[in-house]
Image 1 (cartoon, rainbow, N blue to C red):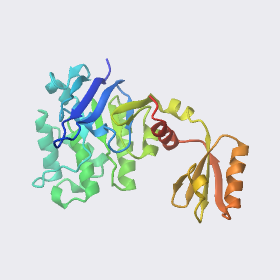
Image 2 (image 1 turned 135 degrees about the horizontal axis):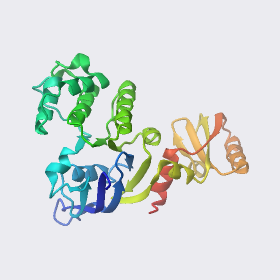
Image 3 (image 1 turned 180 degrees about the vertical axis):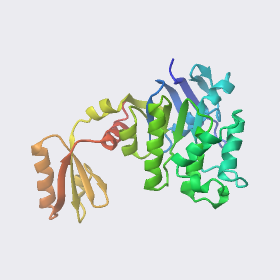
Image 4 (image 1 turned 135 degrees about the vertical axis):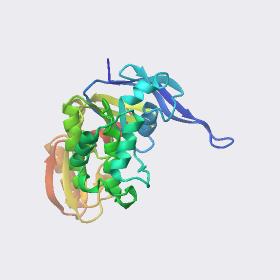
Length: 305
């Protein structure tokens, strides 16, 4: 039995005004996540990732299809389904009247969990919150509030952990601390579903990935299979100056960094010769294997199913 099963899930939002078209946020999404799997859900803004998680968490109802958590339907058997879920939302949501420890105790009570101070202390320690245990939530920085949200999601020891952009806007230290702790829970048997825009995180952590675009699944495979599917290596260099339009159309440009798909040595030399002919000088030239960002951009551009 899979930990999570999305079965032909569609979601259509009604038109906001007269004459407008309804918005189809999800279109026949189907895939399973095995128990103990670290699964990544990737896609651009508006792809439907948060809508899918909202349906999984019971915050939104699918127009069509169903979602199961360890065999329990999130709508018809929501009590058992939600008890197995720990969700870290994308937005910073907190009660300004409680201390960190009080917030975690109240969250425990929602799931009928009592006398779990030892587990709360362990969560606080792993997430670097021990010295903030008695601080009011209003006094915490955005990064610290994010840590508390993670602790709240884990306080009832759920079998399935859902992380919706958990490291958005947080510092490097928290990212490392969080991933070490989540990876530890995953090794202990917890299922993890992650959405993130940090593709290097997904590549390092997730064993399998689904890529969404406009509510449809475009790719569903193991991370290693997706990386093997990359059709080329990448020529990367730094450049002061602007590439000619016909050359820039083939490149991925981020500030001074320019990247071209490179299938062979001849193609590499062709690109570099074109740069020289444009009166530009390429610096720090390197050739690397395609990473998940390259694969992701290819899948989004091709729109393949």
